[in-house]
Image (cartoon, rainbow, N blue to C red; front, side, top):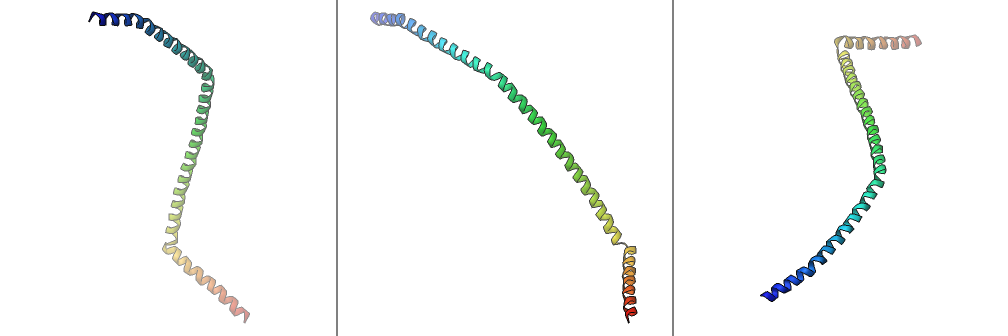
Length: 122
């Protein structure tokens, strides 16, 4: 058993520096990668800000157009309601007894004018 302990102790003594060097190398590579990422983000930040500002301006323009469309829709709705009221009023007027009497008298007047012309030609 003491032989196994000795072999394990030797492997531990040799493995610890190897593991440490591996971790140091990994940490250095990770640090370089993070530095490159930081540089890329610093380079991209002005372009991203500009793109976000353009997006905000575009959204403002879209919102103003939607407000205009909403106003046009409200105007059309109001016009339709006025038109419906006018059509109902016209229908009520044409179905009234006075309109019927006026239609009969108008028909009688036009018939009498036609008859008058017919009799004058003879």
